[in-house]
Length: 168
Image (tube, rainbow, N blue to C red; front, side, top):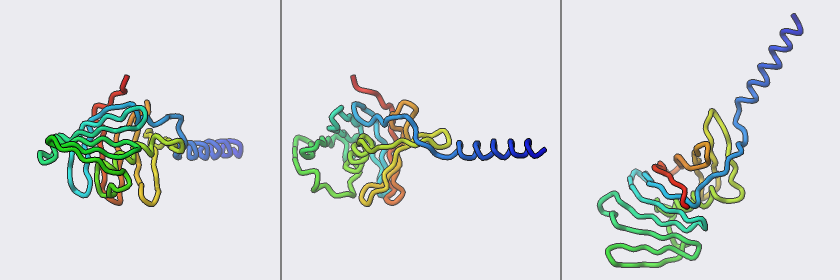
């Protein structure tokens, strides 16, 4: 009887510890992809076609709302180029305010691709996260490492990654 009780106790403890979150052997794939982003930030909604090259350069072309339809942004380490109705404006990435949805998306994608990105498995879900002072998010990933969604509870930033494809 004591051996049976001990065996049941040991198995219960193992089951409890195995069900906790643990590091997963998945690498976030946030470069060399294209997708449709459905963004919500500060109660505003946007839809954009996004292409992230293997070096991290990111092109964002807004399709909604109508007031931003046609706005194209190119993010790179050297700066940002905005194009709209034949006008072009270049500026330094450090001068971009934190409250802009597309710059926040760019920062999250680059952070998730970084060397320190760790993927955690919990309840059959995979995610990577940052709890920094300026960048705080949780990005959910599929079993292949492709992004599904990302969210920052503090600001209400939320992005759904639709039709994600790997670039050749």
